[in-house]
Length: 349
Image (cartoon, rainbow, N blue to C red):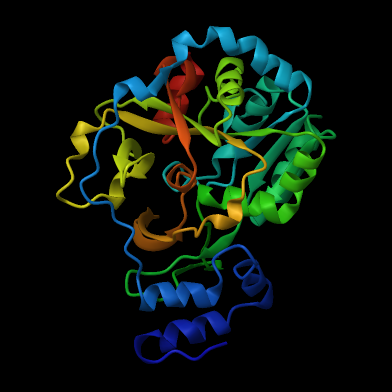
């Protein structure tokens, strides 16, 4: 490993002293390599967005008007031209555990509920971390949901840092975390699933969060995506007062999703009324190699401690590929579970 001077000596020594299994997990090709992590600390990248503009409402499709496309969407599913990708690797730091294994109803987890709702789809890909893979595998087998066409795909991991760039550790040793939902494309590409799916006639991949209870494959939006032959279709929802996340805006002439933390202080975030739901449809044959994935330094509160994570964002797809946007109704398509109280509300309905 390359030697680094000054304040990174201790971090490098800490990394070199990790167990070989941990080193292998955080150094997989396609993820955040250890040397890349150190380079990001030495030379932080600025991915801020300065004074973005609002998007013309006329450029946004309304979900309630898409009924004519439903038949086309159902036809694509019947032909096995669609894969569902469930993002299930989130650490769930705000809710105290992995979201995919949270109990939604008696004997039903968020993940099993999502699979049952989309049981008519042959190809279902579940993005999980290595520490979760065996748990998820056993869970699906125990409730007899594991079948041909369901695949577990490992997400990339890295090590959490302290604010002064040392390894963050707990009683179990170094603290690992999944590197963000931007992992999904590199992970699917590395697994060979995208290539195999496309070669067999697959056309589109629908990506959803496991913690968005309302998110599944919508026939009408799928039909619109296929009919307009666009690389990416992204669902957006009208913001409420306490919403945080990526917003729909125009930057450098491109309509795209930008996380609020990337915007400069001069940007008026309140002017953007539509936010990302993290549900999107992507053509499976896109040239994803053209994307230079950005790593963002993100602050998190973990067990009362401030930690640093470097993550990449799925929404970078909207920056690189022409994307159409569909405004959906919150009560039909966006029911995220971010806290224990959110989960309780779902259980009571």
